[in-house]
Length: 263
Image (cartoon, rainbow, N blue to C red; front, top):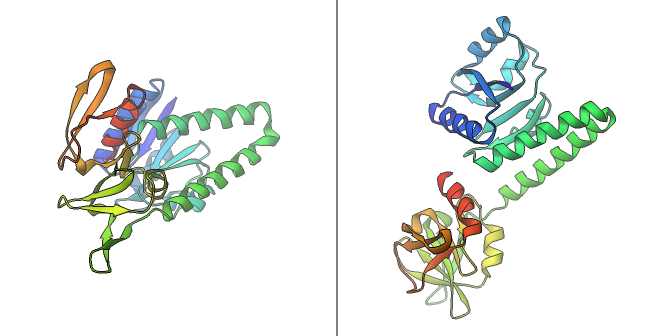
């Protein structure tokens, strides 16, 4: 599948290239372009590829300017750190909109969606617009959920006070004596009225990982990791709160590694 990448960040190109090689070896990256002008020039002399991965913010402006000069008929998967362009992206042949940092599961879902839409268009053309509409609705629901993730907490403190704490200052949540505790970057602990399940739903999953039923961890909470029996992982904390092992099950090890590498 002949593919081009339109991206001006070298690290992002390396990450995307590596993921594509791992997930879909049949993808052939024929060129990488880092600007609007370079993209327009390339399309003036080259045939249409089968797929495009396109960042929105390029060195010389917004990638949407490209569509004012050339007509792109192949599927486009947008890759960006910003969510405010989702609706506009779906007006220019986009099949997916991936928010950075991009992981393996993001690429897998996007490519699977492309195959599904291609099959639908080939065999049942009348359903193509419905599928696209459903994709757009799902995307908007996901983006809306991201807007509602917690960024700050008001934590009850001594003396009838509330302590404002940004999420970035929280290293982990854990259960102690049937109560949820939060450990801050300075090692202090505070009680929380929410359950771990409720916190998992309200926090951005790119920032916190549910290691097991008792622990919800940020990357900053982790000092190092031991390889444990039966292909499990044992996590050691910067601020230890228990003598018991914090184990990640074999079934969740790949999820943990992917989450940790997204930073």
